[in-house]
Length: 285
Image (cartoon, rainbow, N blue to C red; front, side, top):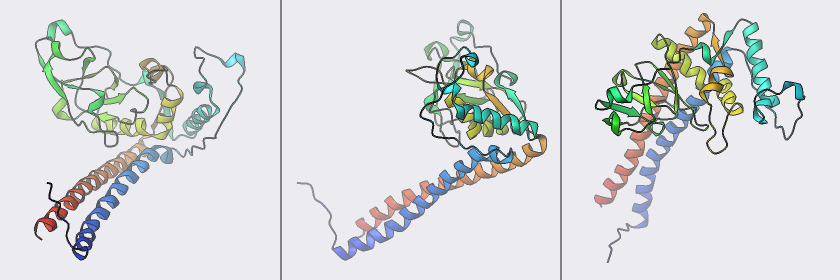
């Protein structure tokens, strides 16, 4: 008994043509949005004059003498060694200083559950992160005693949150002011920069191919591969550009993020316009 509206062929074509126009505009802006993030991931390597040329390697051999506390193939891959050598060359050429994760300000204290169990907090979990722009797209709010046991890290404005699970590590977040004093999951590695500019710099570095590739080769765990806090502190090399390059990178990153935000807004606007146009044209027959 369902009634289906089926306009004549010429009206169908007219509706399809009008809707297609907005659909193409939404698609165009989505492509520009993704292209911006491809550019963002390359900004660090381009400014440090590093070109990654990973090879397809089916097998390789290593000397027993180079074995350390790891027995997996990833961390001995020639491609991993190539990244490390490229970073060291960039440092020797004066483009950057290589820091270990342990040299960053990583707060170790966790909130006391007993002292704060009846206090209400906003809690950010791994699922509340947006991968590209690094926005917080939701939170849980409750008494600390009712929140998951992972809700233990106190966050402050401009903190940088790095998701630990492999596949999520690109979703780096800069904590906005409205979440100052709230909580995040222990599934994040929390870094506390001194300034907002330093936070932007770290955001760009952690999202860069140079560091994301290290996360892949230094992953631990079989069921839930991740970059562990220990591997981050002891093994990951953070290429901190010199002051002159930093200023350029911060300006470029800020511009790219602003453009990406605009492209996403336009994408959503045209996508909604496609639906609304179809309904308007159909209901006005």
